[in-house]
Amino acid sequence: MGILQKIKHLPKRQQVLLSIFAFFIIAVIGIFIWAIITGKIKPLAADNQISNTATVTYQDLSGGTHTVNSNTVLTDIIPTTNATLALQPATSTVNVDSTFNVDIILNTGGQDTVATDAVLTYNSQELEVQDADNTKTGVQIAGGTLYATEPLNTVDVTAGKISYLGAIVTGSTTRYNGTGTLATIAFKALKVATPSSVNFVYTAGQTNDSNVATEAATDILGSVTNGSYTLSQLPTTINLDLTLQGRSDYSTTATVLKIYPAGQSTPISEKNDIVTDITGKSTFTINPPTPGGYDFQIKVTGYLTKKITSLTWTDPLALNYTDLRSGDLDGNNIVNSIDFTILNNKWGQADSLSDINRDNIVNSIDFALLNSNWFLSGQ
Image 1 (cartoon, rainbow, N blue to C red):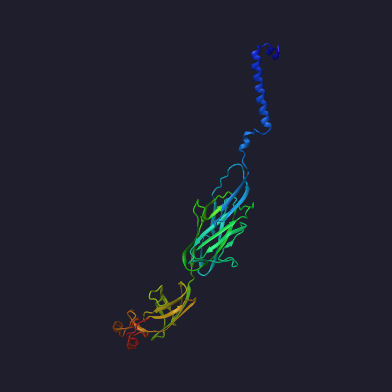
Image 2: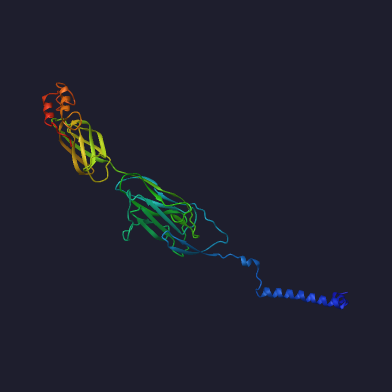
């Protein structure tokens, strides 16, 4: 017997209930089909789809805002902070008044970058940045070719601060990934320094200093290498020429040269082992002080000191002392009775100190030389 036949033999009440239930089921199915067709119901995954377009905004050191558009993968990428900035060479020795170049080397650590800030400090009393572009106002360093633009390139010559920014063109899809010269600094050595430091302004985790920026506005700079430079001065050649009262042999040993700033009483340099030949000449070298005027005092054993004053330092430097006055046998820079006593005690002997004229005997000739300078003092 078919289903319909069985339904016909059911009591009237059961037939009515069964009809209502069947109508309800058919209505539900119909509504569901209608909702799908009209878009009232969407697949569950559709609401969780991720856009593959991102807009990245970053701010450079000078406060400028830059926006770039890029395609991103659907999974989060966290950049590693292994980019580096380094000065090359990191150490060197240069002479005062000479110039030398220092490169700022960027290594992105294998990551794509859109901009790099390099902020450095140096001692402006020891180093002077040479202007790389005299067509622009102020002092600039020489930019490299890693990035298409340099929105910031300034040198504060008083404070000793360099600020440089290399960046891509806004909206460009070009990125820099690799190792190369971000910029080059030309320094001039101003004075002796051991050493003179050039340092990146950098603190890990900070973004208001030196940075290497990705398109996600993440600073990936992980370390820096600073510079330390020895600034030395080439020795100055001194050509000394002197003559001595009462002698024709001007050879000396342990002659002392003291150097004073012009008009001052405290020496800044002393050489106490000068040896002159029979003509009174000697050539030697001295590390020079800062440029300027100086007084040069010579002291020969048994003679009063003599000064050459307010002489401008040059290289080579000629110092000519004529007719140094004899008789200062005790070395106190005045000829008096103490010196006469020393001479008198060696009377008739061959004494290297009291025998002023070097004829191998202390006698009246030596006394006459000493007496001619009685109570004179050295300069």
